[in-house]
Amino acid sequence: MHFTQDFWIDLIGWAGGFLVLLAFALISLGKVNNQSPLYHWINIFGAIFLIINTGYLRAYPSMAVNVVWVTVAAYALIKIFRKTTAKS
Image 1 (cartoon, rainbow, N blue to C red):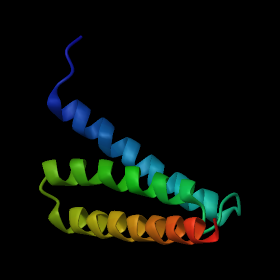
Image 2 (cartoon, helix red, strand yellow):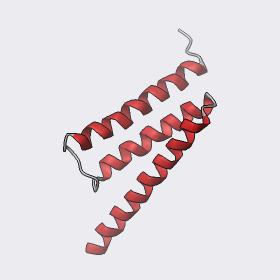
Image 3 (cartoon, one colour):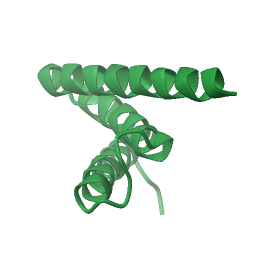
Image 4 (tube, rainbow, N blue to C red):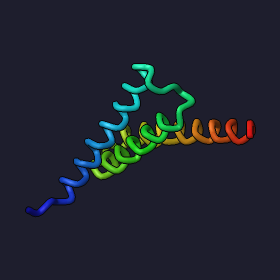
């Protein structure tokens, strides 16, 4: 079976969507909080996958939203890391 580039890009997009929704579900159900590195890492990887998908499809508005999503999550991780290391 031969998988096309379109197949892989779609798969990456579906995985990204799943990860972003997973992060949303985890925080909505109280399984993680906004200080959880796991929450932010899931968002980062989900948004990166969606950036790949939307960039390939030339859906630039959606791509821009996900670039901001990654930026916010990365900033939050940096703040969490700094706060954790300052306590040490």
